[in-house]
Image 1 (cartoon, rainbow, N blue to C red):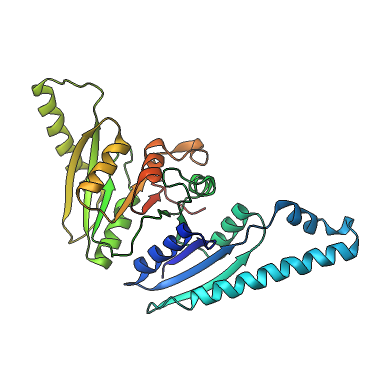
Image 2: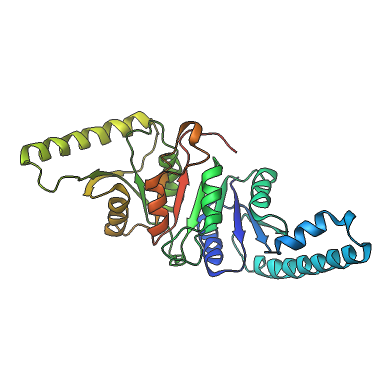
Length: 295
């Protein structure tokens, strides 16, 4: 059973994250944890945490105020949760009034979440700092949903291919989703064109090399599936732009991609290609970590 943890704060982007999760889980069911983060001023949180040094009456008043905030939030959250009607999808609600990042990561561990689902934020061309911090610090798949998302179903899933990632986590996830939703899967590799004029002979040789490499990469994944997997390559000034152009071309509903960040800096980096796609995509993007593991 898949557990989806959705960060929700009543914002339009968080609402789209919830809609995407419900649409994704509609065929399979699972468990949805609706995690509502109430943005309590840091000063109040700190004073409440160290209430022993305060006048007891002030501490009691602050604690009572936080309890009222949480009770109101829980009422809003439960009323929203009652509108979710998906067979075999259980809904758990939780309100958090502490540090947002620490609270979310703690909830991921406590609920043993398989996915983290977040809205992209208010700026349509910029990934929010909170979402970016989560993406950089977890090994679990993270779905980032833009406000442009509309729940029309999963019909086309694009998986960008990076030769340096020998064992993909994105491809098996995309194939699982495609099987559940009867969707197409498209593998795409982008050739970055640094030189405007390339000799025809060299261009043809590069194209053939890419075609052969796509076939070889796919065989190395050793994933058994009866679905047809489309393979393509495109040229672009940079990989992120090429991925987004291809996703538009095939009318993709979802992009699933491995993060390029690896090694000892994995928890500090996301990968420039993944970051660019996340910032500019008009459809949800799921980022996976090919190294595997859960943190």
